[in-house]
Length: 86
Image (cartoon, rainbow, N blue to C red; front, side, top):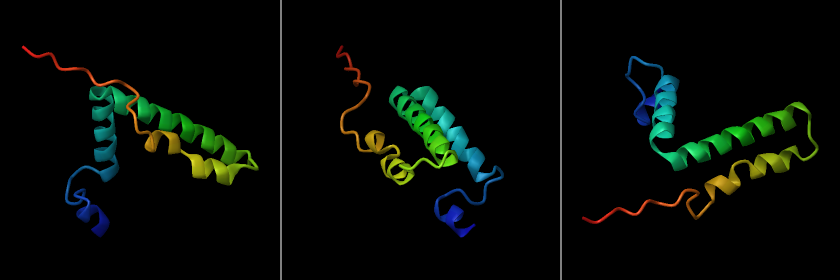
């Protein structure tokens, strides 16, 4: 529980997982780039689970590469909108 308090998730009535899921849903609705990346990570996670279940011979490599291209990506997947100057 001390870890949750240090992370600012202790002392609330809601379970910390509920708080995190709520934040994920909010960001996914309001930030298109986050939504896209989160969807890609979820998809890769499902693929990783399938490889784990099937005892894929390249499982360790799959773990090493999991979300690597998404996390290390330098350029935005969705270009920033240019603000109009009035």
